[in-house]
Image (cartoon, rainbow, N blue to C red; front, side, top):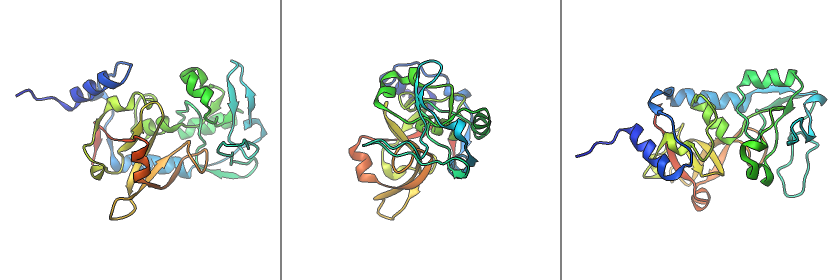
Length: 237
């Protein structure tokens, strides 16, 4: 009988589904479910104050379009902006391609960088070329990467290569994720009901706000969108 290690399984999964080679996950950090939840909660509750210099709606020095999700950002059909200047705000804002630590985010604000950068179809087309180094914040996969203490931000195209796929949603535990390839991911926090119809999750870049939030989501709806339940191979109970 051939026995496959967890690391080999992850590599085989990535070879089938991800375009980029996956590094040796056995050398990646271990993280406990409790640590993962503490990091997620720190991003959700982080308090900060912005100023006019942190608002940007236009092109950065490299010609990349940046739109901060401040209260002046109000576009038809888009999630509206929320944060305001001169008053305390809570929750690290969404930034396309963002991977800021809390300290890096605060330092970026002091340096006059843009507080967040909303998702657009054009940014999805550009991928990494749509990421501005003149903004700070966190995006959905960057958030998961921080919660798992990964050495860099792993996209929704790459995260599955660091994971095993769970055979059933009923096996989800806090710290696991639900992922859609090249689209979106969220951090599972628990079930809100005994029937497992509504789950609690942390995420960023989806309604109601461009920031890290924790809320309940209909599990049937997520299944209909093709979300897959994944577990980081170095997650510990």
